[in-house]
Image (tube, rainbow, N blue to C red; front, side):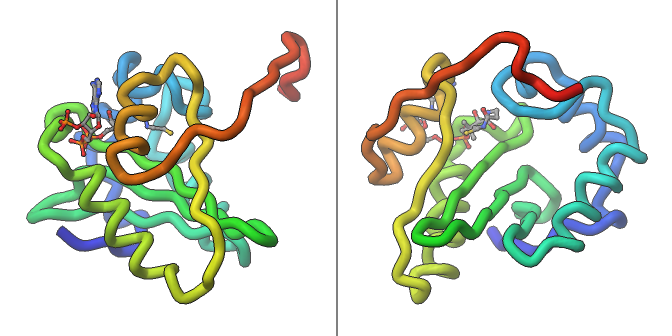
Length: 144
Ligand SMILES: CC(C)(COP(=O)(O)OP(=O)(O)OC[C@H]1O[C@@H](n2cnc3c(N)ncnc32)[C@H](O)[C@@H]1OP(=O)(O)O)[C@@H](O)C(=O)NCCC(=O)NCCS
């Protein structure tokens, strides 16, 4: 497995389809439907940023993404694996790679996980993280 910055050339119909899978996208914060254009904007938002990075996770093909956000004292990770490649240990392996890449920063590694996303909670526990914070939400607070 390797991580490489995701580019527009990595946008295949298969990738567009898995982003639009309602089960896959349930806990992720992007609007549906996703199209080539919305994905290009997403990739560009990372390319034009100095405090976040978007990696594709690749075996012989693109199987997922890891996002990295640099906060003052913390580095935040987000991860997703294509539905047909889940439960094969890829997320744990990708987290190890991205943690090794940024270990020299000496910052705490963090992940924002929704309390109902059991797969993700179990993943991060397996990867050595512990639960520390409570999430609060206010309906109507979303900016359209
Ligand atoms: C969460 C997610 C990234 C896990 O990826 P994955 O490659 O399937 O995870 P792994 O195979 O490395 O599994 C590691 C551990 O995570 C937990 N896990 C993974 N999928 C799970 C599921 N569907 N239900 C319960 N636990 C699950 C298990 O503890 C698993 O260890 P085990 O297989 O030995 O029981 C994947 O389900 C996903 O992409 N979901 C949609 C996007 C998402 O919610 N991302 C997280 C945002 S914070």
